[in-house]
Image (cartoon, rainbow, N blue to C red; front, side, top):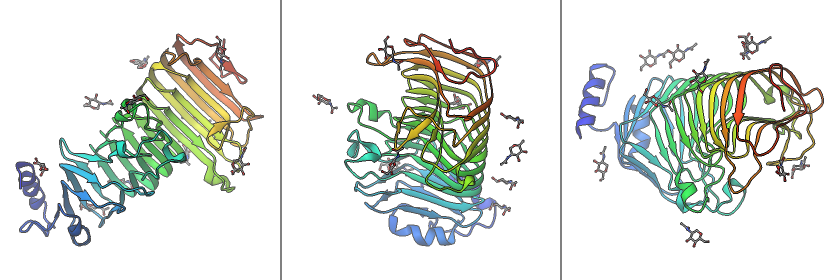
Length: 369
Ligand SMILES: *[C@@H]1O[C@H](CO)[C@@H](O)[C@H](O)[C@H]1NC(C)=O
Ligand SMILES: *[C@@H]1O[C@H](CO)[C@@H](O)[C@H](O)[C@H]1NC(C)=O
Ligand SMILES: *[C@@H]1O[C@H](CO)[C@@H](O)[C@H](O)[C@H]1NC(C)=O
Ligand SMILES: *[C@@H]1O[C@H](CO)[C@@H](O)[C@H](O)[C@H]1NC(C)=O
Ligand SMILES: *[C@@H]1O[C@H](CO)[C@@H](O)[C@H](O)[C@H]1NC(C)=O
Ligand SMILES: *[C@@H]1O[C@H](CO)[C@@H](O)[C@H](O)[C@H]1NC(C)=O
Ligand SMILES: *[C@@H]1O[C@H](CO)[C@@H](O)[C@H](O)[C@H]1NC(C)=O
Ligand SMILES: *[C@@H]1O[C@H](CO)[C@@H](O)[C@H](O)[C@H]1NC(C)=O
Ligand SMILES: *[C@@H]1O[C@H](CO)[C@@H](O)[C@H](O)[C@H]1NC(C)=O
Ligand SMILES: *[C@@H]1O[C@H](CO)[C@@H](O)[C@H](O)[C@H]1NC(C)=O
């Protein structure tokens, strides 16, 4: 037991209802210990654990559990869909101890194809939770999508560091390494996280009342909404009441990206605010709103099946920087018929684009020159 453990156990033991203080049953350092610990303990330390290949670290926690990751949690290599970690719980708190890390060993998988082919790459973490907090988790080298949060209500994610920057070094072979994918989530806060990756920093697919603040995103595809599924129920394709505030997007393909899928059922994006977002060295589009997305690419033919209503931008600043001579547009707006209404954009200034902006709909307060 190191100093950190001793302090933690002392603190936890004094909180009462702590059944494991006399023995070390609540530390998981061997995978074989996991099942009995999560069934019986409410204070759990996952310490320097190696998770066997083709196995999910299933954290199906008792209500009220606190779990701390310490040391290095590693996942043996295997080509399979994952996820490598699955957290399920109500009223749980999950934290990373200082200097702890969960290592997905992405470099063993990256082949430039992400989720579209090549090696089968496991998704990293899946969270399904209510009334829960997730703090200070350090993730490195996701094989593909890093964190998927789904079917969750009233959760906070704070002070995470997701670092897939090695995916750029290795001849740009990390791909589809989304930081946070958020789907069917209500009442969530994602705050003070750093994401260095090769796809969306955060992508919200379905949900409401979500606040994203103090993010630092680098290398990826920006702060995104991506809405539309093959499900034809209207409520499956709705994102509403979302705020992105006080954040920085650096050296990414887009700063702000909203896309709707033309082959989806009807849906709605409404009451969206981006406020105080600073963009630096954006390589393709400062702000990209497209209603022409399908099967992973732009069709060029937009549809208004998922209208974007009441979309506010406030104080968006920054610059573009072409990468390998790529075209750069400060703003692109491609709306389908009746797809866009009630947009107000104030103080949107993005400099150094090579190409003129393009807009087939013009927000109040913004001139698309
Ligand atoms: C949540 O868990 C904490 C810690 O175990 C406990 O004190 C509290 O009563 C729980 N809250 C609810 C609403 O269950
Ligand atoms: C994890 O393992 C490393 C290497 O064996 C060791 O140096 C470190 O102290 C361990 N960390 C914890 C928190 O036990
Ligand atoms: C939200 O979760 C927190 C625990 O993280 C809890 O204290 C609070 O009561 C929950 N709010 C609602 C409305 O359930
Ligand atoms: C990157 O690609 C070049 C040329 O294909 C190759 O020589 C080099 O070894 C590669 N570097 C890495 C880190 O894979
Ligand atoms: C998160 O908070 C810490 C401490 O306040 C601060 O140093 C850091 O810059 C913040 N990170 C982001 C991405 O805002
Ligand atoms: C969105 O916010 C509005 C205004 O605050 C509120 O009336 C509405 O219930 C919210 N929508 C959802 C789906 O929570
Ligand atoms: C528009 O969205 C904002 C949040 O961005 C919200 O405060 C406001 O109530 C919404 N307006 C309407 C008419 O729903
Ligand atoms: C605009 O956003 C920047 C961050 O990008 C911030 O420093 C500045 O204070 C904001 N200005 C206002 C008037 O809120
Ligand atoms: C997308 O792909 C699906 C399945 O391959 C196909 O049925 C559909 O027509 C495609 N949609 C478009 C707009 O190309
Ligand atoms: C950007 O401008 C270049 C010429 O300056 C042009 O060849 C290219 O088609 C433009 N691309 C877009 C997307 O506007």
